[in-house]
Amino acid sequence: MENISRRRFVSMLAGVPLLSLGPLKLSGTERNSLNHSQIEAVELILRRLVESNAVPGVSYSIGNKNETLAEGAFGLRAVNPGAPMEKVTCCPLASVSKQFVSAGAYLLQQRGALSLDAPLSKYVPDYVHAHEMTLSQVLTMRSGIPADDEKCEAPVNGQIDEASLIANLNKHKLDFQPGHHFAYSNCAYDLAGIVLARVSKMSYASFIEENIFKPLGMTASYQLGSRNESNFAQGYAKEVHGWKMESATLADETFVSGNLVSTVGDMQLWNRSLLNATLLSQETLQKMFSVPIVAGPAHTHYASGWFVEPSGVIWHAGTLLGYGTNNMLVPATGYAVTLLSNTPQNEHWKPADVTLEMYNAASLGLKLPPLLKRVRSTLPN
Picture: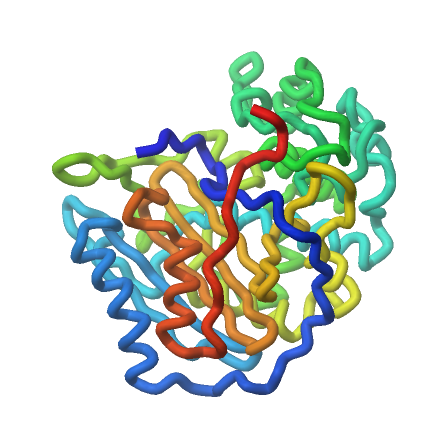
């Protein structure tokens, strides 16, 4: 199996034509219910994953702009002693957390509290390279901030916090001149979290809680490590003869590129707010879901915390030690699909591809094409 680094999004996209996402207009084809055969087609896919030992446990939800249409869970949230995965089981979102970092930045811009196009040094003057980039370049992974987690998330004098993150980044040069390439960077999003905290004058966790979770009624969502939740999915790594327990690290809990927890039900509340433009305006969503028009090898279809496919599918997956996740919107038909599990992507379990398979199996619209070829960076090897 591929050696997966913490919170890396295993599959990255690059080298595809530029596209401009139109307004999030729904076609009106979305149904207000799914029939038994549609739900059975989706759940058959997930049962087979559990039965084939590709995942210990998995939960899912399908919703539209009005309501949650189907949700369920299969397998185990804990292997020994055995405890079932349930639709209300809390699971780390891994890099699906980046959606909330991005939304927080766009929300503050919508309120006039910051500008994504201002030099980053306006908000983080203590980062030595901040004057070379904008927050927009940070969110779209085109800032040049190091892509190696260990370059920013290692302890400094035994501490892992905002100060250690900036101290670590100040030791390293940029991977490339901002705007000239694309490279997926957890460090970049960790730094964006500091911007949100400083501008809002509260901790990142408090900002997300007060400005996103509470307004949307996402009562089961929180920062990893901040609650002692009994119905929590234990993470696992695949072994030849079973599953090895994996636990979140202090860095996993501290840094915002992958440190949120949620349920499949709560995620449909989030998705509904995006499909209805209730938290972020249509204009703001248009900006957040727009892929930058840039020249040369920086061309990809990563927007701000989301991938945008030529088919119109908008999605992001995530991997954390012990977890694999995906959240997908299809604005043209008004559907959203969330998938959470307690093992990272492996050769038999690819959350993004499975989510697409579920959509097609349920016949929620015209058959969606496969996701495009994925790479981690446009930098030469």
